[in-house]
Structure formats: structure tokens, C-alpha cells
Picture 1 (cartoon, helix red, strand yellow):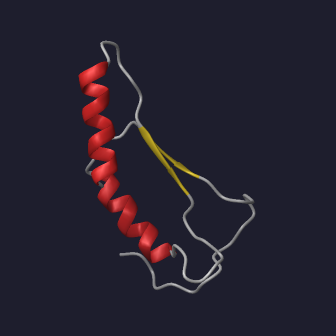
Picture 2 (tube, rainbow, N blue to C red):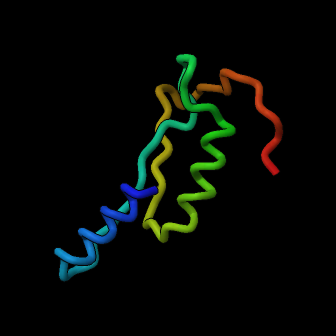
Length: 74
């Protein structure tokens, strides 16, 4: 989350008009090791506290389904 904090500090220091800051990521990677849905849930929870303007969740194919089995998210 240090990168998000740094970007927000730079934006605050160098912009006079509103500037949209977001975070783009893939929720799951096919390769092992790779980002899993469990890790994605933790990332989204952490990003929720960063006051971002948007999250862009990017998939290779919108028809994709989970590649790995995960427990239900609480």
C-alpha cells in the first residue's frame, strides 16, 4: 500500500484541480504462484481504506471463472 500512499501524496502536492486516483489489478492469475482470489479479497479490503476514486478489476476474458477453489469470503 506504500505505492498508493506515495501516489496520493504526489497528487496532493502537485495538482490544483481534482485528480482521479484509482487502482487497476487482475483478481486472479492462472500461473502458480500467482495472485489468488483469497489474496484479492485481502487487497480489496486494504484498498477500501485508501479513499481511492475507483478500482478497475481487469480480466483476460469477462467469461472467466475462478481457476482455483477458494473458501467463501466472509
